Amino acid sequence: MSAETLHCPTCGRTLEAAGQTRRCAAGGMVLSLYVNRALEADFGVGSAPQPQPRRWPLLGGVWFCPADATQMVESDGVVVCPHCGRSLAHGTLWQLIELHMHAPIG
Ligand SMILES: [Zn+2]
Ligand SMILES: [Zn+2]
Image 1 (cartoon, protein in one colour):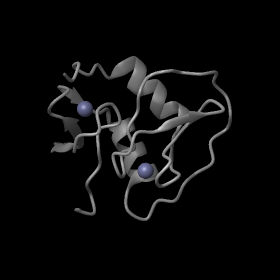
Image 2 (cartoon, helix red, strand yellow):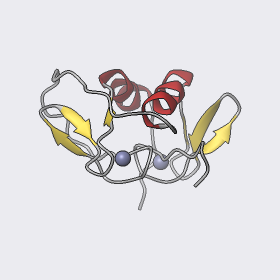
Image 3 (cartoon, rainbow, N blue to C red):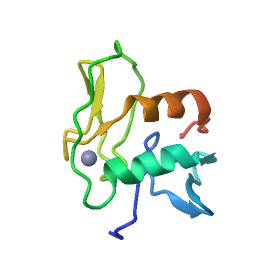
């Protein structure tokens, strides 16, 4: 796996380079610069699991780890990867939910 490979948090497919950011081709979704940087920082090579504050009630939805494409689980309002222990930051999740429309994957 390339050092810079990240997976789509919505469907788990490999993200493609798209100018300053990345896109999920299958979902027709281009990451905001904010989310792209956040995913690189939190899930890129050399990143370590960061503890997240328990802030939100259950969010629902299905998320995939951008580092290893494992389906994530929600625990105490935090979306965590059971494989690597990394978690999606609340700001990243908010952007994904509110600002990143992703085509349904059949
Ligand atoms: Zn996707
Ligand atoms: Zn993971």
